[in-house]
Image 1 (tube, rainbow over the protein chains, first blue to last red):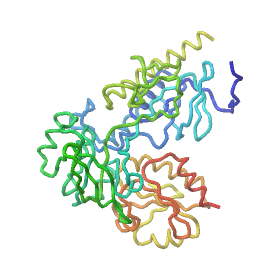
Image 2: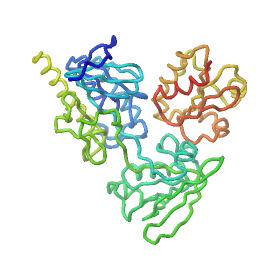
Image 3: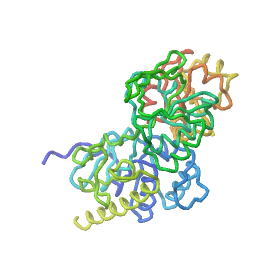
Image 4: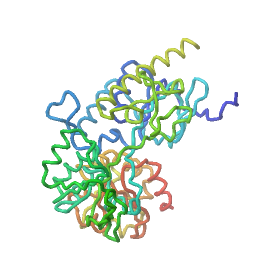
Length: 320
Length: 110
């Protein structure tokens, strides 16, 4: 066995450290605190996670009229805090396991925990084309609710064909005069109800079998997209000042040790108790390998992971 | 709701408060309808306290003040811009970690 690493700072030893304060992390925080475990929730930016990038939530049970994402986050947070949830802003940079103790390296110093619950969510996948990085924030966007209002009466493009792309294309018609939905296949992957809504919306034009090859612009930001029809191989240009990219998600798992098994897309693999390949490390929510990434599944993961993290903490104290 | 070390700026006082400021200035361009802006607000406030006396921290509501963001080509929020001596030294788009903003601030405070 290697020598004990020398990061025994004055940091406290927590029962459970939860990484991420989106729906999964907040639900885990609620369950862990209510079960009286000494728990800390770490959040990189602010409480809410990706949920704050959406305007309204229509499919979370208990809200027949829908609920604003702000309001839902505030409700999750208030309920967890009622049971004593503490959270801290910190960017997690690494996670090491040292016997039964896990050391979490963060921008605010090291923290130690008997169990770690990874609920760090996802980041929107980039298109990976020329001009994307250069014009991010100046025409390239990954958040329709944040940036849609900058395009009142303008034409914009949306790239993607899944639920998020179609839902946000519909949302953008509130501002834009026309929304060009650019999709690489000849059918959408989004659920039927969203497809029907998009097909019926006369402000949405769908460009089938089409990919963006380059995002072009100048000092004023984006001015046009270079498009390719993947069937006919014809190229064209679409003059738009804005392009919204919704082409999937990448798990925020760079800090998670390689001993934790991943699926081919890089999501963390767990069993149905949210246990990863490393004892004491649990995963919940969008960062986990699963078939449905929704708020309703994230909170279920969070509760299950917190429950089993608690059992793990108990097993350590009985063994010790 | 700005903290005690965060000032509100608008289209009419931007020149005076930001471009002519003796201290470097961090401007947080935001709007009430933007969730990630809400997420990043406490981080901006923390930075205003961490760098009190060395950095001026300001918030600009892009809904009420369209001219200033347009001047800097801003079409996404939250956008944070660091100014020193009237020039842009860094532009950060999206809700990022405090450590990333602090690293940019460290380069301009002396």
